[in-house]
Image (cartoon, rainbow, N blue to C red):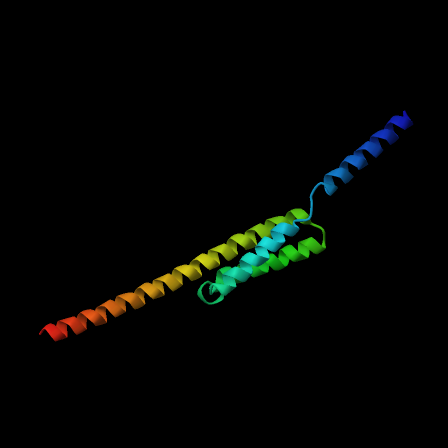
Length: 121
């Protein structure tokens, strides 16, 4: 009877160790998320979407901390969230730049119309 209990304990411990070992470190996701934050900052996210950039950076920092603690599930989740926040910041920045360019184009058209109207009178 004692042998069966010892065997069950060994089997259970082995199962738990295998379950813990089955979650690999999300190194690729961390790299992708870091690149997304860098790309968003380069696109002007820091100026045009500061809240989203701050959130992305904070989540990436928390993901790095989770990685150092070998809490890979948390690290992966936070890194994925950081990536999405960075993508949102990048999209907002690009949208803001496009809006600004469109406004400048409209202003240029307005000025040209005024010139045409003045010359035809």
